[in-house]
Image (cartoon, helix red, strand yellow):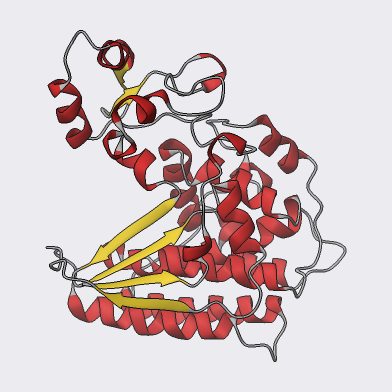
Length: 328
């Protein structure tokens, strides 16, 4: 299998108890089937087995989860912000989410793409402050290709289009706003090729309300939204890295739903989120933890990317052509 990773990937190191916003606090963690099977093999007299049994529950989506403790802390997060489960039975037996976070892993047959998420503060710093045009490293291992039902021709079309999109975002001769506008036009044309009946818009939600998520994980995010500052997109490396992050992470997901325009809008909105709500890596961390890692918030966000009038390709291009009379 071919493994693809962004060049900053190898620099990531978890700082565990020193993390300024622990990934073990603020959101529910699913207990995957393989982990559950292992927990059932533990002796029932063991304290860790008893603790696991006491906190297992189901969420509204039918997922098996660990019930959070006070202040939305994982029930296994101790006072030193370390994991008691990891200490008791080893990190390899913690839930899949815990073992892999903040990595995302997508398989496309014989290719596996791996990256880091903005939701981790350490990863956010790596991504946000990366200097130069991001490159991707490839390696080959002995894993067999994964079974899937994706259309090969569509995947190749999208893969080639993503290469073009990333190259466009790394074109130094144009400002970031101009690159994003060109990116939107590329996506509109590609969307027409994928689905000539595609329509966007119809929901009149206000732009700021898009970011007022129903499930609030960190009140600081709501404060960022409430105190936003509408301004022009800056021509800096951080905004380029943000756009490339979203293109790498989401663009090829259109092979499943044929909605590539929404995936590109995420790249544009990522830059606008940074521009309006803080212009720092902490802003991107807050947004990602709030949205990318809440199934409820993410489902809503993905729906609005297609249905919200304020997020149409034309409306986003207007925002990129910033002027002082713009209404948020």
